Amino acid sequence: MPFGEIVCGSPGSGKSTYCYGKHQLFSALGRPISIVNLDPANDSVPYPCAIDISSLITIQDVMNEHRLGPNGGLLYCMEYLDANYDWLEDRLKELGGDAYVLFDIPGQVELSTNHESLKRIAEKLTKSGFRLAAVHLCDAHYVTDASKYISVLLLSLRAMLHLELPHVNVLSKIDLIKQYGDLDFNLDFYTDVQDLSYLENALSTASPRFSALNMAMISLIEDYSLVGFETLAVEDKTSMLHLTRAIDRATGYVFVPPPASKAPPGTVDDTNAPAAVRANSYALFSSAAGPMRDPGGDVRDVQERWVDAKDEYDAYEKIQWRREGEIVRDEAARQSNCHNAKGPP
Ligand SMILES: Nc1nc2c(ncn2[C@@H]2O[C@H](COP(=O)(O)OP(=O)(O)OP(=O)(O)O)[C@@H](O)[C@H]2O)c(=O)[nH]1
Ligand SMILES: [Mg+2]
Figure 1 (cartoon, rainbow, N blue to C red):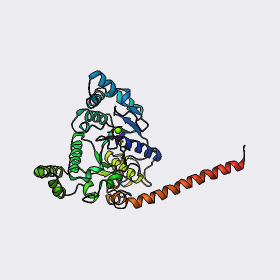
Figure 2: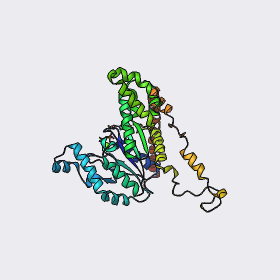
Figure 3: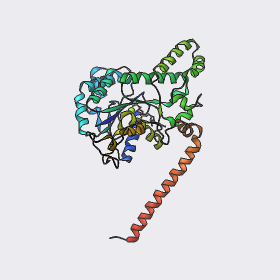
């Protein structure tokens, strides 16, 4: 059964970089991964691309032929892909039934908030058997300003309601957050979307005329109680692994046994066998879907790494990387000495 992520978010939020980072991580882990570039404006994709929309349609052709600007051209391309879904389906079939596919989406936010094409493409993928999650990237610098934070909450909520997929909102580029100044609250206030009435002061100071409107938006977000965020620093392995676990829970990948796995000892892999000898799938569910206790899973650790003690951690990591580099270099030198000592065959 194929799994996939619809990687969406505003322009420059880090979608293509995330796809590339995930490709590197999964390749190192030995997990299958393919990336589909659905952004016709992506001239130089940083990752190995399994399927590229530009072999179906290019934005330049659309702009020339239909006299559209870049934005209109891009929406046309998505509508064209929706109308020619068979093209995508045929190529996805070639990736096999166990594929794990990332869909790199253009940055136009209307695609994930009100335009119908992406939603319809996601529905068709789901119908064809894909287990999908929307991974919605939002630049973390938005949380440094109360009104921008409200905008990003509304945008995320709108994307959740529009796409109707299992949804993971992500504050991307969390490694840069410290450079935008001090946060008014701890990071967990923003990721868990805690009591938003604390933002009232900041919002009223920035735009006193609209304080009633601001409070109405806050209560709308709180009434839905749907939005929350994971965090991401794409070059940090702990951060990528944690996000991967969160997405695996959203898609249901956590319940897929590895290809060579057997039934646990003492159990029988047969649904007709008596309950006492069958594997306890309830335990599987509760451990897979229970609280995540992995390193980096707690947002307070993220706060410590990227906000409270960033400089100390950066310095520590630099030393570790240098040591690892020296070990690799010494090992290469040792092997070459051994080779030279043996002489030519
Ligand atoms: N420091 C840091 N920079 C990042 C991270 N993720 C992405 N970037 C940078 O953010 C910039 C934009 O990244 P892209 O991956 O091109 O963003 P995108 O969402 O694909 O952009 P569009 O396709 O134009 O919508 C690049 O300069 C990346 O190097 C991150 O986790 N940390
Ligand atoms: Mg991109």
